[in-house]
Structures are given as C-alpha cells and as structure tokens.
Image 1 (cartoon, rainbow, N blue to C red):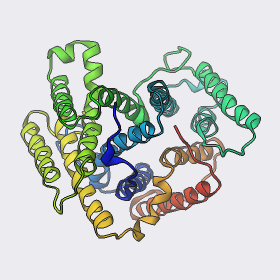
Image 2: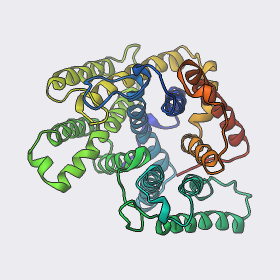
Image 3: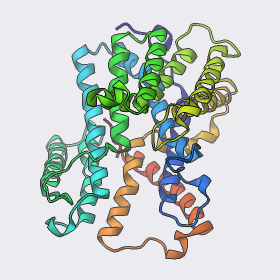
Length: 396
C-alpha cells in the first residue's frame, strides 16, 4: 500500500469537531435513556416503527467518523515507515480490544444469575467497566515501567477472573456474546473495513463497490429464507456489513474531500453522494422500512446522508470560514472518546454497588430529567478536560 500524498500532513479539525459533537450527544441520550416520561423523539424508535430519531443517528455517526479517520490513520503509519506486520498487529489489537470491552459491557447489563455469583453483579459491572482504563491507558514516557506493567497485566488478570466467576442465568459459567455491544459492533465494522481498504490500497472506486456490496448483503440478510439469511456464516458477515456500509461511506466521503490536489469551492461529488445515499434509502424503504433495531439499509443510508451533510457544513464552517473557536467545548471528548464512553458506566455501577444516589428521584422524570441529562453531559466534558490534562487517555 502506498502513501496518499494529498493526505500528507493534514489535520482536519472538522472531523474532530464531528467526533466531539457525536460523543456529547451520545452521553446525553445514554443518560436520557434512564429518564421516564420523555418525548418519543428523544428516544430510540421501536423496531417496527419505520422511522428514526436523532437518537438513532448517534451510533451511525460513530461508524461514519471511524471510516473518515481510516485513510489518515493508515497514511500516518505509512509515513512513519511502519511495516505491514506492525500495522496489522496494531489493527488487530484495536479491533479485539473493542470487541472484548463490548462483550464485557453487555454481560454486565443482563443475563446473569446473581444468586450463584461470588460477587454482586454491580461490583462485577464496576470492575468490568473500570479495568479497560489501566489496561489501555496511554501512559507518559516517564511513567515507571514496573508500575505500568502491574496496572496493565493486573487489569487483564482481573478481566480473566471476571469471565470465570460470571454465572449465566442458564447456570453455565463464563460469558457469552449475547450481542457484541456498541463497541464490539464498531470493532467488527472497523476490522472488516480496514482489511478491505488495505487490499484495495484505499482505491475510491473499490470502496464505492464495497459500499454497494455491503448494502446488498444487508438487504439480502433481511429477506426471509434468502440464501444469505439461511447460511449462518454468511448471515454473520452480512450482519456486520450493515455497519460496514457506514464506515465505508465515511471513507468515501473522506477521500472525496481530502485525497485531491486542488479543493474546489463546491464539492459536487460529495453533494452527489448525499443525493445517492438519500435516493437509495427512499427506494429500499418500502421493502425494509427504517429501523435501527433491525439494522435496515434505509436506516444506514439515511444516516450516511445526514452525517455527510453535517460534515460538509462543519467543513465549510471550520476549514473554509475558519470559525473554530466554538468547537473547543467539544474537543476534550474528541481527544479521548473511549474513556468518555466508558466513564458514565463506571459511575453508574459505582453508585449501584454502593447504593449511592447522585440526584433525587425528581430529576429522573420528564423535563427535570432532560435538564439533568444535559447537565451531566456538560459535566462529563469538563471531567474529560481534567483527565486529559493529567494524561489519563485511553489509546487502542
């Protein structure tokens, strides 16, 4: 794979801003999920609703941003003259870490028999959410090596122990991937996408073909008794290609914006893809509907269109008009996305384990609950700013 010269030495603030905004909204909607009596448009739509809200756009935006970042990540490693072995070791470690963390998070939520576990499920969840911090923290160069090893390998041993002390509600010992969790799904989508991206050397037309293939497989997997749905390994791959369609879309838009020698005032190819994403979603909607829960192609393509349009606006505002000051509010989250995703879970299980209540019940219902969710999200950004200052940053 060759270095993409036109991507060399570019720092795209608008991608960071989109990441930061997405994470802020994610914290808000995750906290809001525990609030009662909130409007439907502030919650995930039911599986059969044939509709989506802004909440259903958060996960796709994550995947889209992962895709947008892939060309820059590979380019940076090629510029450093990393060997293919080094690049793929890093890639596999990142994907596996996301999948492992995702599975632990899912098992902390449900599926256990509390009466047969030697520690309370709340303590189990607290450890499951906390251990990724010492394991994957980006330690400064002057950090004592012996202490780093103790923290990292100690954390790994704790996760292994958590696996064996987990008792399922069926009575079986050990965890199962009931589903992969949000982080796990991101890990699988990332892995599938980067393998293909490497094989085709980041070729734009090859990535477009991959997007078409992913949407087609997603569609076939939703058709009852189709050969894809009836073949277990094909259905497994097609299920992850649902999310790959969004990472591929992100790569395509990233290449259309930044893998070019001269930037035009209006990026007509990107505008064209907004139209193509939207048209595809409209054409497939009568057959599959719009559903995040089912992972329909209309949901992925409408999401891709919205994410592309939103990024275009941010690009115009920040890269063209140079209006970047406002984005500083979101940047602490953009600089440390994995930690800020994990931290609310750590807080939740800590409060559950020690029966500690942060706020009174009045703030768990209706408008007060919505306001609290917003305040909590802002507090998390300030917490991240402090943690970033003290070099507590997760790096996969």
